[in-house]
Length: 391
Image (cartoon, rainbow, N blue to C red; front, side, top):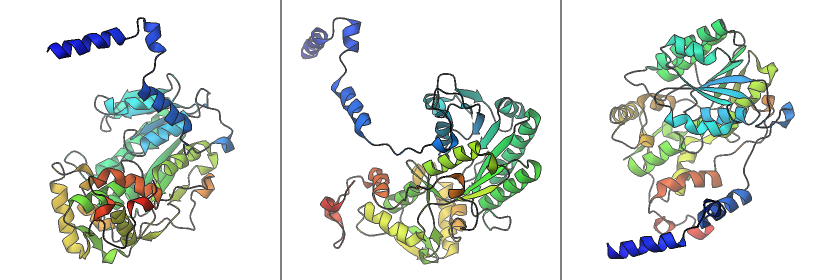
């Protein structure tokens, strides 16, 4: 107690005498942070092709972004806010998980509105002053409150009804490139039914179909990294020979903003995939290499055994790590190639040519949080050492 009181008195003696002086004396951490943000190059996408202004301008667009607290939603809000759009962000709960979105637009341009998808009046209120509605609502597994049909088809019906009442010009819906009515996956069937209902009842709708998205805090790279470090096995369906084409989530957010600004995208479907196509086993092999694993736990398994594994993991998803959850439906989707068709509309038709690849340094950065205490000193022979790894 005595030495603690002496330290407290010394801190009081060293403090600035006035409030103005304290404002003029930034800490060393603040100075470091300022220097970091001023020297670190940021990967930004320009909307100059569409002749729009900056964050403090007025684009004339009022957009409602449903699913703004998810993985893709914040990127859409950011891209619309930085060109001077007014963005309505509906939320459930107390709104603490979307309060940071206020900083993505000018003062008063980002409006938080409480809603529930089963309360049609709240949905009507969220879209009543909007010119475009973006639907990013989705989930990778069913819950006791929402099935896939309720998450996708019923949500689409509620949004279409609200937009027709309010006279909204456009709806932009996010879907999957593998969505099909005859698919074995309930998730893909629900997406296909929602897409069909949307285009049948709202001709001005634009559908953006994407492959698996990756990025910070995603459920693709983080999911397989958690399976590699925490699960007993990472299942490989058909020996991992099916193709994947992961797309960067920021590139999809840029594409959504471009579709909002481009009137020629009305009534069209866009298929978005990343710049590289490779086999699933190649991706898992490089991922485990970046994780510094002694040996890979990826093994070829039958579909029946893999579905049983996904069902068991899904039932115990709450005690497990959130990223380690892989559902039975996701196991079913692994038997399909997740690749965007080349003959359909894509990124180039929206004016986007530079895409972020997954492999290399970007994958290295995503794996850092999963390494723990593992280092290159326990890597098997024949792989790179720490000096050869460039971050």
